[in-house]
Length: 269
Image (tube, rainbow, N blue to C red):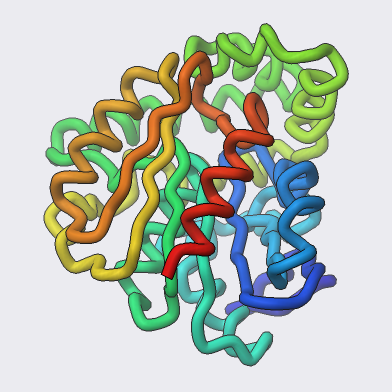
């Protein structure tokens, strides 16, 4: 279903009954990335899977402003208002994890529990942010110049997704199809608007998060394992889980294990 949120058309898939569970995908993904996960959770939860701006069936405006982290957080807030929801559980993966964390920091009273999969609070120093912003802008230009197919071929070959080469061919093909479904302008503006380089750092605000937080990372993804461990020391009510033999996208590589861990976390009082 389409929703007008802060002047932008967002596609949102809702299914099931029970406690609301908001799902936020990663860069180049869509609500479809949760398809295996949703089959399990629609029995007990009202699943709300959003196509983040520039992704899936949501709009991909030419202007950058609606893509900013602040703008997308406000769009999610408006979505909750339109759905008449006062509180939700939130799961965010990678870019969606940064968005989930930003939403929880801005609207903590709306978040019952928070699950962050391979996510970070941003970069700590202005120098790191400057370098990453330049890198993201170069990548955005590459997408616009060379097109989606060339970019997807490059993107699926980066070290972050190396472990996905071991997945069954039909799973790899589904991920590739999802990535290829996007527009150049959508992905390019997503990088420019809410990439890690332009996102405000939340490291110094992590101790403000008082809701239960589950941090999930894959053993093979050492960078995010270290980030999760550090985040755990700063968030008052955080639990960290590292999944053996798994990379960045645990929900894709090990959906059964991911589903079980999340289910147990959400069920605890």
